[in-house]
Image: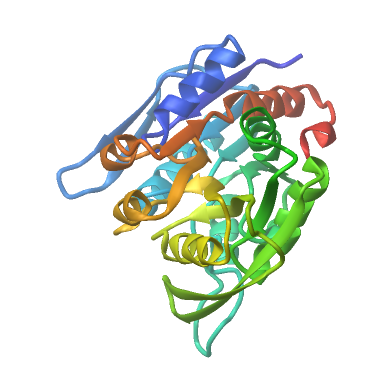
Length: 313
């Protein structure tokens, strides 16, 4: 069996360390430097010839810097005769731009897929893509993992299963919320949302019964938290006992943390695909679950050639 090495950039070193700890394997010796004009320089300080290399890097804020770090590290490994390079991207930036929604706009998610492939990635492991069809943008294998096992376990252990309802904050997320409701044997509700502009939404009505129940809003990511807090308000106005939220990716940009802190939400359960900024980390409503074991298991199975199907819930 060929050896493998795990490398990471600057986007999420804490998660990378947890993954390496789960695998009982130290992180590879790679240096990421920045010239005074902002150029990024990558140096690999160990022999990787004929090894499997896994590069753990979320393309979160600062998105473009972290993306270029990932591309350059892949290129450096390719030029070092690495046997196979897998880009482990817990959060895939630009995923929301997966189709043309207006004339003369790019399909950015596809372009990023092309960049990763051109740089030299042989495989991608990611988590909770904003749209599943992004897997088809790649001409290399893609394993799209789900944070569902981690979030489901938390919900089962912390909420009364006889009195809660899973809520989708919009029609687009109904399938995700329905899958959770089915596994938890819970009711389902959907928020009818009208979006007036990017990052601006107004919740209109609730489809389903939330009266007297603990409502759990489920989304793949929370960015500015406008959709989430509007949905929470609408749910409470329809008679819910309390409202919680779960998401995979805590983007939490702009006024997100203030909105969550001032909202009717009791808690926001998220994962460590993106590291929290200091303000979010200080918010007592936000709780982080780790997906390190899930990603670590996917890495070891990918390296050994075993199936990762059982990791998909």
